[in-house]
Length: 403
Image 1: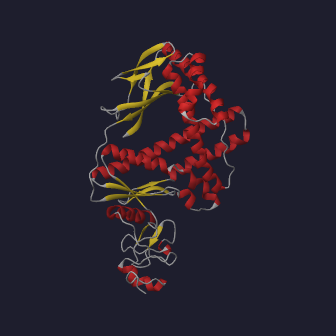
Image 2 (image 1 turned 60 degrees about the vertical axis):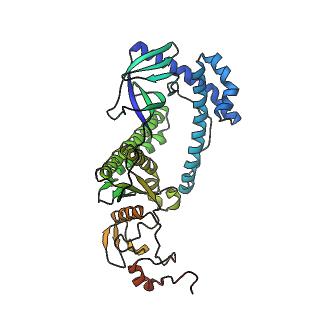
Image 3 (image 1 turned 135 degrees about the horizontal axis):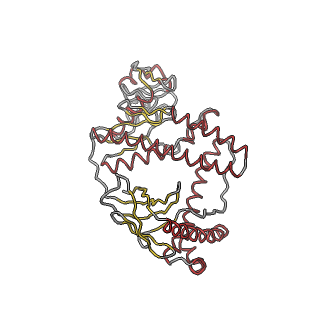
């Protein structure tokens, strides 16, 4: 499996100047490649290398490998930006907001440098890194969770908060997860970010306060419109993004630890396209579309792989309307956002907890449910549905081809 680990470099003033000079030259090369890539709509690594490799080497004095890496950075940035804008415009269209336009990219003077194994190597305590003045060796500090047995695939040199960091893409051997007999169901939501079938809840109350505070600050700064206000907006965006990442990291860690400690798997519902499938009031749109659920799911999945915990993704249709006790499905089973009351057996429970239990049960049997609903005309499966189906105009099926 692959994961990204941050390593902090320890550099003297002279070494810092060497790193700064290398960053500036590298990103100047990227800014020279970018207009050509944008005007010719050439976002292929090979296409840009054939077009600009010799020019980049001769003009900016980069080594052969660094020239190729600069060109690849431009091509990759355009491809990822284009895909991101497509996804963002889908959401903006639902919100009724102006769509984003694909424009030419520019690269900051001290933007990240992409390195690979040919121009950077990581030892037990020091890193050997290419600069314009030749290779230098720097000490680095690593986190406690840095794997002892790992292969570094790619590394980005980043300057942030007055320090140089290496963002290393590390590949570690996969742990083959055992087949669990039970699953820990996880229901994801807006009011409650995550609820497990064990009853653990992760409220969005604190995160909602942060979102509103940043929203107010953004509104004031956007109205101001000065250069300093725009710089402040970038800082706020970075803080909000890091806050979300840290929150999702903490939630995913607790969920994976709970499953690992009880030798269970983790069951998640497939939320692909959920923002486009669901509708909310205008006042709730920003909150509904704001949280990074994909990031949370990805964090759970990679932590689970590292711990040897199996993750099962199931179809989450009707999990909020299905009774976790008798299996009866009906829209009126959920009279409010937080409450669940089965119209068949009378079971009452928190709606998110009920949904998490359904998710866990579906992962255990790994089969689709038969929906009993007057709106869908689905098949009646459970005994409770058979007994109460007639009250809603639903009759049990006879045999295949029957009348």
